[in-house]
Figure 1: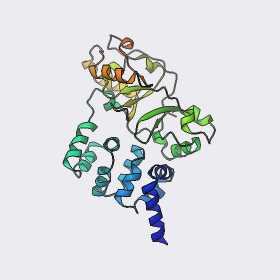
Figure 2: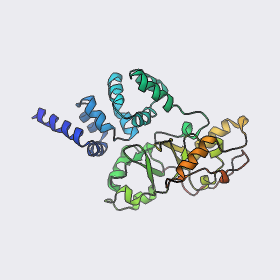
Figure 3: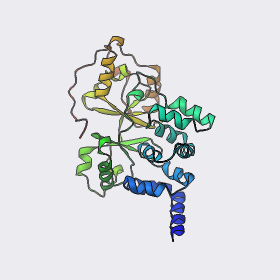
Figure 4: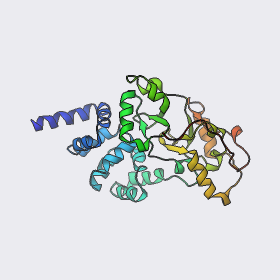
Length: 288
């Protein structure tokens, strides 16, 4: 009986990885761990490809380092990069040390984000949710990791690409059977990861938002940049303040994203020529 159950479970994971990921993400941490630890790394990787990066990182911590690296090596580069950013630099290097030289070198180059950029200041540990779950399922997941929840819930598809945002107050009043796709805002203000912090701090959008999502060049979600964290960073670098200019990388990203339906947060016309951050009165609260 146990062999039959194991076979059916493995078959389900292999043939329906997206559905399996949605089911497993809804389980408690203990139940999910008990189930996945019985599976082969290859089967686990097929399912984790559709997990959120935070959820995958939590699962990999349950395995020996060598097994975690094996699972990581079977994931797509985009998934591997997003997952590695959930770990501290020491753990990142240990995992990379168990990968083949070529993919390890690629990941080392792409997970590093230059200081003074939005990407380096973004918090990668905020909760993200898939678009196809219901409001009821979303609330259940929030209860599991309340410390990762901010006022804005970022909706990320199985490729880790940002597709929308849901305000917490909207989630709380929505019908439990509604999907997040049906209530999310598609017109998302975003910050490219390469944007210089001194460019970003001058934007008037901070008058409305306490956090803004940061995306990579391929539109993968990196994390949330909190206004408070940005201001604290720049205050710590106050002796290095220079007039804010739009970087070449930001100009390139503006050209790319302005055609995509996403609203890039920083445009040249909106930038201030002074490096002194303005006093702002924000409408929304950052945390619950």
